[in-house]
Image (cartoon, rainbow, N blue to C red; front, side):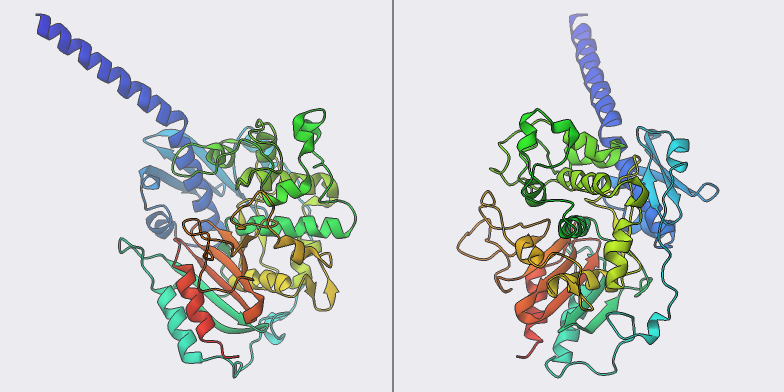
Length: 460
């Protein structure tokens, strides 16, 4: 009898632990899986026009995303995700706005939001030479070892991970001295397919801040114009602190478990407001801490500075269309603020055009789009960034974490800087080699090896 009572107590204790664990998963992990999956499937279907089953197999096939069940509803242009029927999340598609995960606001409130966009120019891009159009010359520079370059591109298109899985490189585009010298796409993707940039979005957001600095509407050294920080220690946070990721806000950028970034992206309707509300962990300007939250605060500062009437059109009128990049789309959160940290889409060619803007010090077709010194300032690390890895929402070829006597990318010039997104979405800018290199895919590649091979294909 005594043994039976002990067994019952052990059984009940185990059952209680299972219930508590499952409840925790239901309120934290499952909604993140559902949110991530429904949002990314929605954009893949409605922006990239991909087959849902392909997306579920490739983009959502790895554990724990594979636990999710995702359903596309063509009647209302939405995708719903859940895990074992729990943690349900719905994402809706709206024309020209893209996909938005429903959080905090009702679906009706989100669908009723108004966005005014400029019309895209009606031109035959195939008849206009690159980079202002898409017409490419029949020959490439004599400085390019074509066969070597083709080998480098083919290698990265077929690269696998350390455990033998394909990295799913979907696009590679190489620009030398302003001209496209190599371009390749995976089956089902082409020069007209928009790709998810993930944190390339941060670099786009930085460029928009630059435009407003040029217009004397913002100053990087001034306190960040965030009303919620008035009369608090956070009012010491400057725009430069936000750009350089040194705000001191207690934000964790970890994706393999519940964290600040997963809560922000998949459970919050106003991502900037959520991040603004976080406590200070460090004195502003003293510690480098990579944070998507900082980027979304920047995005809402842009919205407040530009004003509601012109906000939706601002990135297009003042940045994208000025560099002849007409495929760009940045998706908003439920509050209507562009998710400046993560959700930008564009073709590989348009990401390359953005890279060229920075390669040319903010000048496009004779017009100074960004402030004269903006690119130079954008590639200066903060004093808090000991490894010199980061500038104004751009990564730098600083020092290796394990061996600070070596460069992070040891076989790539020190002047390389790049816009980098999750899974290896990259726009590398290497001024000393006259190169802009774009690689877009699902999983990371051996960047250093790839860039070394590309550089070796260029003769000086």
